[in-house]
Amino acid sequence: MKIVVYGHLAEDLQQMIREAMDGNTAIFPESEEALRKEGADAEIFYGFCHERIFQFLPSLKWIQSSSAGMDGHLYPALRDSGVLLTNAAGLYGSHVADQGFALLLSLTRGIHHFVRNQDQKIWGGSKSSMIEIGGFTIGIVGMGGIGQYMANRAKGFDMYVISVDAYRKDKPDVVDELMPIEQLPDLMHRSDVVMIACPLTDETRSLINAENLSQMKPTAYLINVARGPIVDELALIDVLQRGKIAGAGLDVTEIEPLSQESPLWELDNVIITPHAAGGSQHRPRRTVEFFCQNLRRYFNKEPLQNLVDKRLGF
Image (spheres, rainbow, N blue to C red):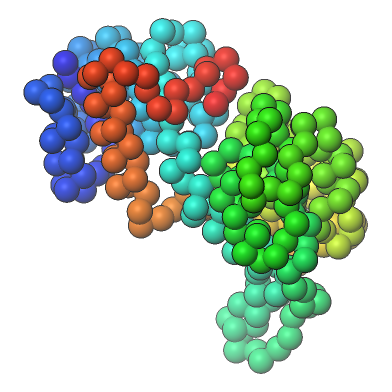
């Protein structure tokens, strides 16, 4: 059996995979050309299998994605195939949640204004009020792995946690109220901060639309560290420009990179980071360790962890 590991990995992580091979062969192609030459008889793929390279892998039976979000994987050829797809859901929750709270705290404490003042050597104040987040009601859209990490952090700040989820019925202990997705307008209306933690699917595209944004308090914040198209960007720009919400922290945008012409760049009540929430010094090792665990399951014909329902998109 041949296993393709695609994407740069440090030598110690490559060795970890080799040790999990159980007598099988692992290859580490460093270019698309090398993948094309060596991948025709590969049964397992680790990494990001984008549409262009899927055609070079006709013998695949299983893809272990190094990503959590599946919106970039579910192109027709893979979605309609019999290839198993597993993802890295739950492995990135801690640092994505960190990014969400970094954006929120930067907005509420005016850090973005202070940084701009520092660039100009100005000992100046914030253009916005200094806000404590203790006692906030946080509304988390999606209560999967990332949502649970957000809820844990929220409790550390003495926040009241409400959430909506389209599929989850069991309420985690750190969540005060778990509601069906139909109650999203209620969540938007009650929350002092709305954090998005759901995957991008056909159902969640433009889920945060003009109607739902209009439910938010003028003192509330929107934080998106999930996927840009979940938010109707034009509607968000409108409520930000009119001061209908207090601000937005965006690690993702509808189109990336964000166009230089976007009004979001110029808004004082917006902080933008360049799809950086997935970054962590621990990420490469976590994903490789998870792959090795799933490899052992595959070799032993046991159910794989994080098996994606390609119809649902997660």
